Length: 268
Image (cartoon, rainbow, N blue to C red):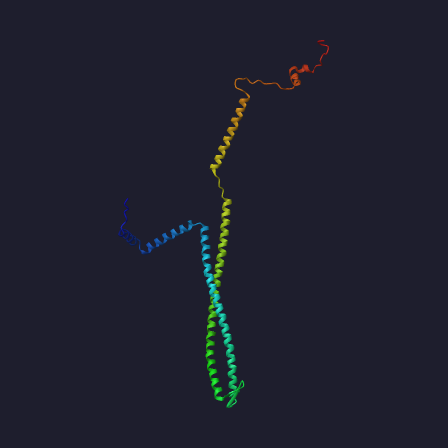
């Protein structure tokens, strides 16, 4: 069978005609409204339990991201601690270098031409050159120390902000997880209430039960009738049999005569 396709220019012409008649804004409003209604219909038709599974799936997908962010925070903490230790070590070294330079400066203040340090004798020019070299190294290390202190301050701020973000993110995740558990409990309670409160009667089964009871009753009555026919065969007249005691039969037959004293001489 041949299937005829609508030419594209007809579809385009209809679209242009609709837009021209209603206007771009009105046409777009109709499209958005129709799309929202389709989406709402799909959401309404989706079971609540399915949406809860979707929510749990979304929460599970968040766990790797939370772990990655926590790992970043842990890495920042370790790097910050290492930088703090480096700064503490450099500060101690600078304090030692300053103490040594001060000792040299105090020696040069004596105005001598030679000085003795650690059992060795040094000329004044040698002591001045050594002090100058020490001062240059001290300034270089001090600049490095100040740079590391600035880096430490920036890293501490970054670490603090990262912690706040991760903590807030984790708090929202925990709240959503508790909310999902609460919604699951509410759904179970709702399903249990619906199961208890719903009266479901199968009329077909009830009708079959009634028919079966009627059938059983009919069979019992037929069996009773058959038993009666067996006890009273057809063609014979039923005769009542007097099975009373003989004394009752005598009293009933003779009536008042039975109360008179008997004449024992009669008939002898």
